[in-house]
Length: 289
Image: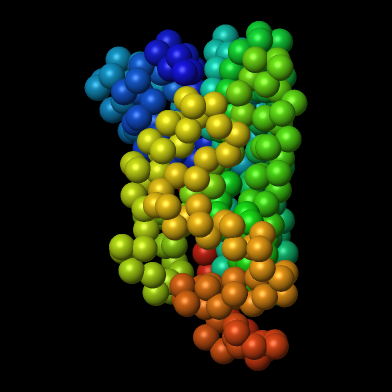
């Protein structure tokens, strides 16, 4: 098992959602924390509470991972502070729902920057330092949407597929160097991901962030390459795209986003095409999948 007590854990997207629960759970295990998100006030409040309650060190860095310069700035600050990172949790993410062409190009690019480029940059920077020391760990948060194309969340699902494949490859590459890499693929989780979207999903359709985080850390301690935290149906759903024809998989995925309330109302999600509509972009920054 990974030794959390006395280790330093960097968590992106730490101000809410899964990131906040990760911070609470790891502080309870005695880990010092590097908390990263855009909201400095929220991070300062969280850091003060965790330090007071658990006696751990909590270092705050307010950064926007949609800015390509953020990775170098984060690494430089921690190097200056003399804080080597033992466990990196790439949790922050950005998701949009609705028609791809109705979103601003800059917002789609930002989602790729946060979900892919920042994750790769942080993994390289801190993974390299871990490799030199011969120990460390990286947990990348993907999604069960990584296993199939997802109409009306096209960029999000594609970016999570990248995270899954990237993480599995790194698991193989870095294990001989003493660095453990795991990719987590949770399903719908009760976080802020669906805020601002007209989702029709009921509360019972969501896993709790506490259950998801504990499942992720349990799988990490077991040395797994991929984790499927949450209810068994999440794992089952990842098998269907491997067994069904690709065209059918896309149609079923489109029907699912429609059922969740994430597709435009006029979209013919189960048929041969869509009726052109000009909907408002929906979705936004989130700390889970």
